[in-house]
Image 1 (cartoon, protein in one colour):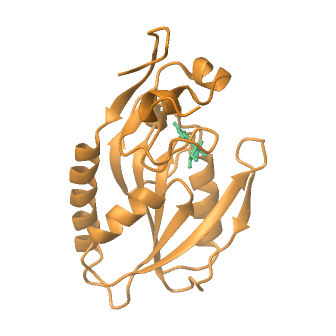
Image 2 (image 1 turned 45 degrees about the horizontal axis):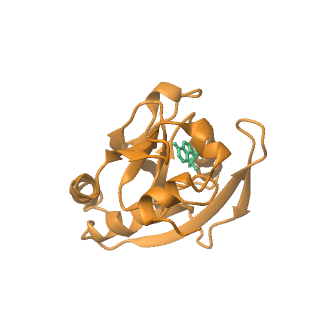
Length: 197
Ligand code: IMP
């Protein structure tokens, strides 16, 4: 539990570092097994930046030949309107693609990504997400593999951020008081790393 100076609860650990290690290991082995018959390596597509911690651990748990590429996308501000900031360097036509996502929330981002990648004629397209906030879904979207289903809470850590902060927290924290964090984005810094300011 993480409290502010007044003793109010700001955040709590939702998924511990140990649980992440264990689940990501199992998921990596399961996905590797499902791709083991391919004649060419699958291409993992990581969506920057939140998925990078998950990606690094997942890849090391997959003992098969594979390739990796990155995409970066950003929302235009309106729901579902997404723009590609950095595109893939790989020609994905005829390739077996695995999108590696940190979290699926409304589903709008993943829905856009899947549509965009489908238009490039891959041999197959699957998605793995570390976290699934299924209760928040606006558009139905296929997710073949998932790490944890989580409730409708804002989370940070293990790659996930709030205004660019907290990605390096080894566990996943649920932010209890999002208004408190919005007012003082450093409140968890104090709690996690000591009084640095
Ligand atoms: P969606 O388009 O609503 O599914 O949102 C997907 C993106 O929103 C994720 O890739 C994250 O960047 C961001 N996001 C959604 N929920 C959270 C959260 O709880 N913490 C941090 N980022 C989140």
